[in-house]
Length: 179
Image (cartoon, rainbow, N blue to C red; front, side, top):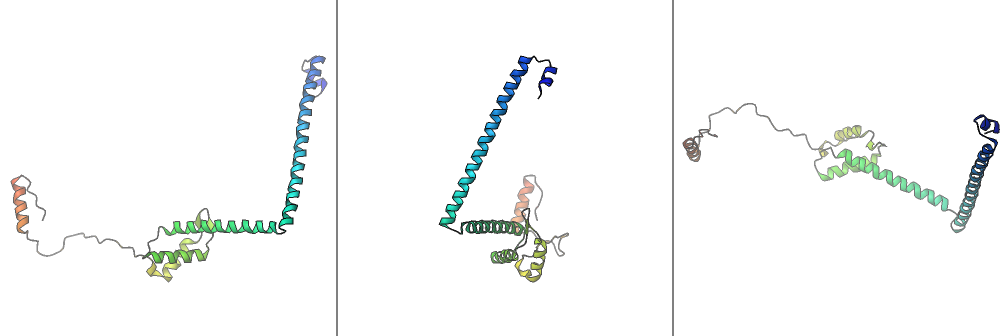
């Protein structure tokens, strides 16, 4: 911002000086805030360095231990996620027994299939090969037989009770028989 630009806007010399004074105050305030932030940052960095030196004094291997602990935690989380994905994927399968399901899940977990978006990659291929190697682990797909026509032979003769029920139905106006 220049004096000529402000005068071109129609401001008087007094108004231009006031704008520069306000602008200078804003700039100085922001410079002070930036200097304070830099000083705080430098103080925090030195405190962190001092804390790290103290930790190394207490336990020189603390960084390695922290990294190992983080890696172990990540592996446990990955194993839990894979276990849940395996159980969810196997929920749609029908096994002959609970022990067959447990054996299947143990073999699946031992295979360590990669996990992507909550599903196991290669699960269908694993199930196919498992069915080939141990077909008795899976329950057979049983469908109910469908009878399209009656069985040949003589019709069933109604019993005395059925004849009495038919007579009562006829007496009350319902002549249907159920035999």
